[in-house]
Image (cartoon, rainbow, N blue to C red):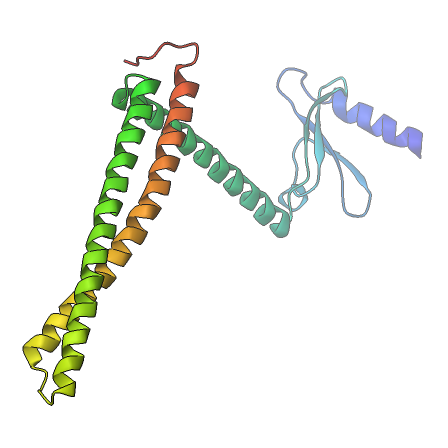
Length: 212
């Protein structure tokens, strides 16, 4: 039987023109080997080989993927494209950051100087707010003492007086929050300039300090 299969294959191969004919070999779902010059539509799902007139394998075609396999493959391709797009955008972002940084600063010393100037300005703002806070707190104590004296003497505390007390309290809360915000801004400023200095040194190391 095995010899008969080889004989059949040989006969079929010899019957085709070596230049133009095609011969396909595949195994169906039942394990039966087929040879033909065309693959029937209901058999294209199987892996197959294209043979030359001499029986040499010219090309191999994998079996058709199942719907689940096609979906998984499509998802894999989509994910790969998304990753490639993310990498491309990140490269563009870093290049834009590099150019912007080199346009913004002429030297590392400039970054250090700007950092120091900004922090000093914030510290002065905090100091002024702290001084104003002390003044407002003294004003509040004075107003509260005066209000207590009025109540002890049976005098009615006017709405204008109460409004004045509320305004002082609002100022005290404002100054407290201002100090908190500016203190946080100092830390943000340090982080910002330290990051930009590190990046600047990275971009200019061995490349000079200018960019076209």
